[in-house]
Length: 241
Image (cartoon, rainbow, N blue to C red; front, side):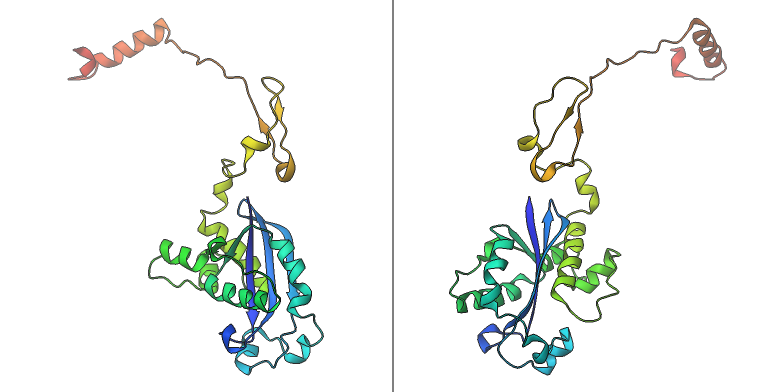
C-alpha cells in the first residue's frame, strides 16, 4: 500500500488572494513506513514574499527567484504522487493551494477524497489535546530538534513518523498485516520451505513450518503417590470428596 506524506510552504494563507506555493515536500510510504524515496522542490512564486510568511519558513523572494515555476515542476510532482493516497497535516490548506496551482497550470485538481488529514486523526484519537505537528512529535517522542523553521520536506518526514504512530506505531507491522502478502507470495515448495515475496515486498520472508502434534506428559507413579500424600495434609481439600 503506497501513500505519500505531503507538505507545502506558501506566501500566505489564502490561494484565492494571490498567495502561492513556494515549496513542496513529499515522502513515499509503503505500508505506513517511509521508504526513503522523496520529491522536493523550491518554487518561484512569481511575486513578493510577505514578512509574515518569511518568518515562518525563511524562504526569501531573492532565493526563490532562481528556482523553477510551478508549471515547470508539475509533471514530476504528479508523476511522484501518482494516484496514491496523500497524508497531509491540515489537508484542506495544502490541497487548496495545490489545486489553485494546478488550475493555473491547466491541470485537473486533486480530489479531496484521496487525502488523509492527520489533524483530524489526532483530534479523534486525543480529544482536547493539541494537534499541531510539534505537539504530536512531543507526544510520540519524535525528534524535531532541527525544526527551527518550517520546511516542506522536513515536515513531510516528521509527518510520516507521526502518521505511523497515529496508525498504532511500529507494532502494526509485526503481524505483516497490510503488506498484501496474499497476492505477492508464491506457492510454497513444501513443508518447512520458504515462500518468496515479489515486487516491493521482496525483502520479506515468510516461513512455513510443519505442525507438531501436542505432546502429553503423564505423571509417574511416584509423583501420584507424593501428590496423594500432600492432599492428606490439607484440612478440607476438594480433592478428598
